[in-house]
Image (cartoon, rainbow, N blue to C red):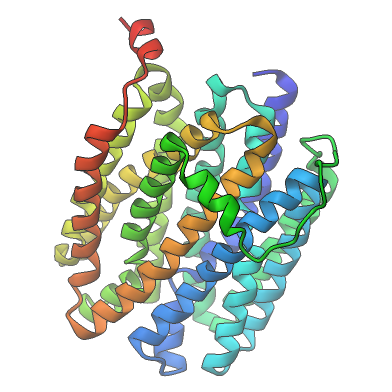
Length: 399
């Protein structure tokens, strides 16, 4: 990888890291804020968590296609401003409706992950793609280390203070990107008239009908759905069942981010050169199965910390590897659009996951969201074992 590209990777890493710190601040405190301060039901909390991803489902492909047409940089900058505005609204939320709207706006602003992945694809070779995608994963991980810890501390002074803290971090990322983030592609005009569609079902169907890309997107959907079952319920598990404080919940999310970042920075870079993508996917799914199955039975803070670390190893492997595999199969001029479709489909999983998780938690018992995730990941492990083909070139290379 050229030195210029390495420098650019560092810039986008810092940009996403600061942005995700703001996001991470709210993750552990949002469910407890909605429950304790606003008296919202478990299913209502699931709806609030889900609407964030519903907006990403709708707008991820749009952002990807706009970035293919007009560049990655302006999309990243504008969406960061939207995100900052959503945090400010959160700080003044005193009803279900206002909190719901703040998460809608946050989801719109968060519809830039496919664009960030396309940015990485622009500046890396196919051989370096998994390592490059690991940069985004590491930024997520570290953002989830410091964000929840900061959020837990700020919540002592009021949940509105935590919201304003998130806005400050996001505006800092926006300012940093203005001065340091270069454009990764030359602006070009696509043939034909540019169409602005809420969701391009025809294009999505075309992408999903591609045998290898379609299966990888489906695989990512199931993985994300399984983990999304716990988005709104894990903090409730700690708060209602194990009687953890906001600070302890924040520390658990921080541990998740730290382990994920270590895996993506320390292991993915080396393992992606030694193991086939298929092997990494299967290993990651096994860790996810174990983590999800044992989460409701950790009993103590230490037990939960160990189990969620196992889960974080699995997600830390899978989050960069699968988008990297999709990118390798995608035409160069459609990187943003295809990765946008993938993020949109995964956002749909993040809609359905919290809705099911909140419903199952409230009506069937606190164990059900986690057990559901374990069952789905076990099924997708069996399917992937037979569907994913070994890379013969890498196999020969490693002999």
